[in-house]
View 1 (spheres, rainbow, N blue to C red):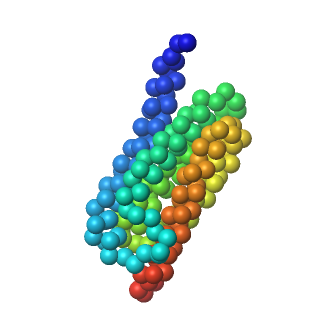
View 2: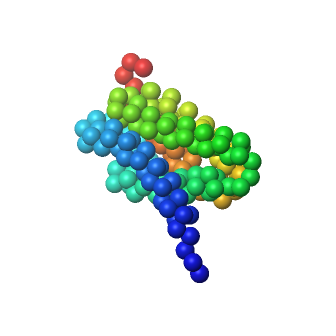
Length: 164
């Protein structure tokens, strides 16, 4: 059995690309957690802070594998390119949410951003499903987590409403 180094490097590059988005988002998130985020009232179902980093690390890895499967598909090139464009857009919205919520300290703008993110993930999953069902399935944990994050964002927005 021979290793296909081109595929291995492709998967690693796709994962790395997604992890870079996570690193950029963490530049806004990490400094805000001990001060601003810690001062907010949170819902009872808020996960502990230590859970976020390993979950996001896992999600960005799954996203990279998913994107690679679509990128390497042999089907309709136009459909593939559209799917990858939506993937890129949702990745940008992912980083933007970190900036809006944590960087600007705005649960209201964060909520607008995370709703847009959720829809772009859903569209991406739908487009990926037409190309590679496995690629779409790999994004299920991501949309579930973003749904939880949207609930948290909304709850924080409502619990800390001061002059919306």
